[in-house]
Length: 345
Image (cartoon, rainbow, N blue to C red; front, side):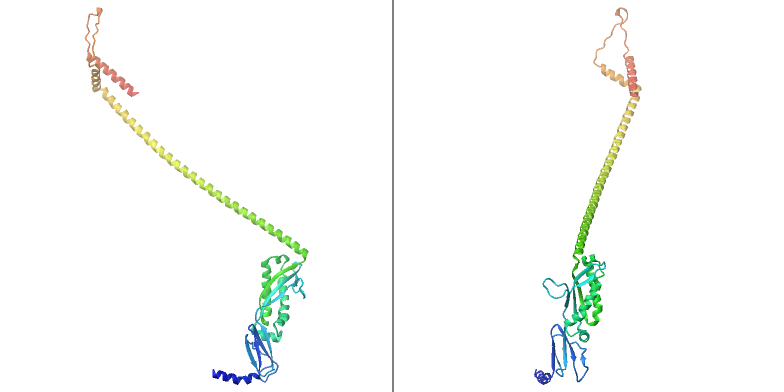
C-alpha cells in the first residue's frame, strides 16, 4: 500500500501535465493527435475500451471522439398528425407499377474495432455516421429489395419479411467493411393510393372468403369419406356375422343329417333283424315241431271244455267215431299255411 501511494504521488505532477479523456459504459473512444513529438499525427489506429479514463501527453495536443456501441434504430416513417418535419418513409413503385410508401426500421450498431476508420472516413459522432452513411445506404438498398414485390405481396407477411431480410443482407455487404453491423430490417405499415387500397382490400377479402369455402368443402369431403369408411366397416361386420351364422346353420344341419341317417340305419337294421327272426320262426313252425306246438296250443284251448257227439245217418241213430288226431293235424297244417302266407306278404 505504501508503494502504491508513493507511485501515485510521483505520478501526480506528470498527470497534471497531461490531457485526460474518458469513455462511458456504452462508448468506445478514438484519439486524434493534432501534433506530436513522437509517433504519427492524425487519427490513431487504437480503439479505447468503454468505461475508462485515459491520459495523453502533451496536453492540448489531442482530439477525442466517442461512438455509442449500443443498438441504434434508424426509423424511416411518415410523420403522424401534428408531428413536424419531413416525411421520411420509403416511397417507390411496385413491380406492377403502383405507388407505395413503406415505414421501415433499420437496427444497426458500430463495430468497435473499426471506430478509427469511421472517424477518418465518415464523421466524429454516432448521429453523423447515421446521417452520412447508414441512412442513405438504407434508403437505397431497402428500396431495391422491396420494389421487386407485387402490390398484393405487401399483404402477405412472409413475402414482406423475406424482402426485408434480403435488404438486411444488402446493407451488411455494403456497410460491414465501413464499420457498421446491421442487425435487422423491419417493415411496418405500407400505404397505396386510397382507391387502389380499397380494390386490394376487397380482393383479399374475396380470396379469404373463397379459401374459407374451400376449407369447408374439404372438411365436408373428409367427413363424407369418414362416414363412408364407417358404413363399409358396419356392412363388413354384418356380412361376417351373417357368414358365421350361415356356417353354424350348415354345421347344425350336417349334424342333424348324420343323426337322422344313423337313426334310420338303426331302425332298418332292427327291422331286418325282426324280419329274419320271424322267418326263422316260420321255418320252425313249418316243420313237425310246428305242428306239435299247434296241437299243444289247441289241446290247451280245449282243456276243460265239453265235447258233444252228434248222431249221423238216417234217423240219427248212428254214432260216428271222431278221429281227434286227424282233426288236430288238419287244423295245424291249415294254421301253419295261413301264418306262412301272412309273413310272406
